[in-house]
Image 1 (cartoon, helix red, strand yellow):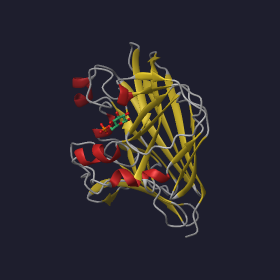
Image 2 (cartoon, helix red, strand yellow):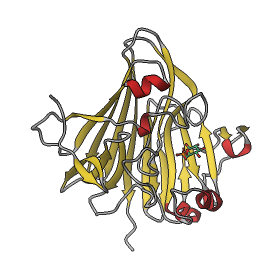
Image 3 (cartoon, protein in one colour):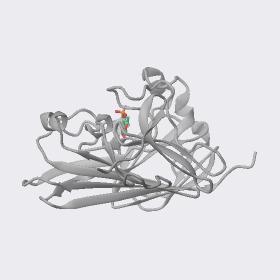
Length: 287
Ligand SMILES: O=P(O)(O)OC[C@H]1O[C@@H](O)[C@H](O)[C@@H](O)[C@@H]1O
């Protein structure tokens, strides 16, 4: 039998990747959700809300929730689909091997998912930790006999300083759908994205890589396979309205999500889709 030895992280079952050179990462079995990435300098690079209980039935706010098979409310399922609240299992490394810097978690159909979505599937998330870099590879496999459509995203909460010091470079001159304006299609300008209040945008066919500059330093964000990028922060009013987020914590993260939204993917029986998001810390402030 294949399994990893779980650790307990804030009371929830998890897998920990670590090495002296690369730092560490923690992945919850619930949701297959990365909730911590500590770089070799000891700096936490992901945001995790202190008001979001782990191991319950609610989605965990922070880290990297896996959105599947639906994005947001663009379909009949709960927002962002069911994958982020289902119990995943660790399928690699194999029992007895050192779970040093790479692990793969998997989710397949169950009575619970079939009650929500009548399809056979096998999803995996492979997480690889190297010095200053975290790579996450998501796959979706149709293990049934009929084709199905899906959307997905890695809803990455990057730790950031105050929102007014955030700048995202690489999405200039691209059109985006503005969720805060009821999905209005907005023509982009040649300015970098500098959110100073709530922001909720879907960029279709986004260019790569992006560079996120925050009070925490610079990070290169690269996605392969994922055509779209979501940029989200709830802003002060949105944060205050969320029970699982401290009132001022909109000033502690920025979500840049590698996503498949614009054209739901049709997966034939036996077919496999994959998308990778890579986070690379480029510059660490010396203060
Ligand atoms: O609160 P949730 O379900 O985790 O969603 C958070 C946000 O996720 C983003 O991906 C969406 O674009 C936002 O519209 C949404 O508010």
